[in-house]
Image 1 (cartoon, rainbow, N blue to C red):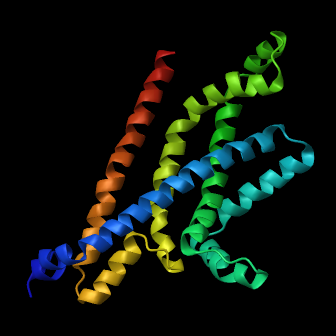
Image 2 (cartoon, helix red, strand yellow; image 1 turned 120 degrees about the vertical axis):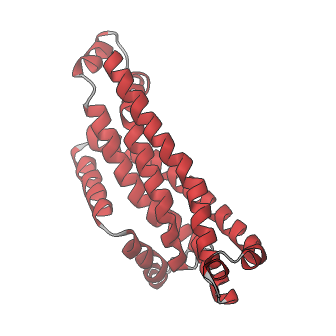
Length: 225
């Protein structure tokens, strides 16, 4: 067999195409769930760390440090295989969402903390002088400015966590990599893995370019200001 018959066998790829499409659909759904849920949780944890009572601030710090330090694969295995011993059973999708969401939320919290702390204190003082409540100040004054600062690194983290969804295959989540691996075993040919790699590139390359665009745009906005 030549190179193309081994690694780019179109007959094999067309045969297992439905499996790959199911896998890419699951991968995109998993990534979007993690990014949305983890992003919201991360912003809340950031606010707890900065403005909560002392015990809540320390709890947020521990949360952030632990889940930024623990390898995602280890966390996946613990959630999927250890929690059933405590009477908690999660399927592959829920396990992957929880594991990657915990990690993503911890990084999101740090990104937004840096964004909030980069805002001059005079903004908060001016809001207090105008009689705005704490909640209104955070929602209307602080967070909009923090978002502008945090969006480029946050988007970069989102792309990174989208790539890490490939680890979900270890917990029987039928994502793109798992489907490609199964297809390879069925066909005894590595072409499904090459096809999966191409599909990852098609989905993630625009996201990578978006990160570069946002970084350049906000850098120029900062110089203009």
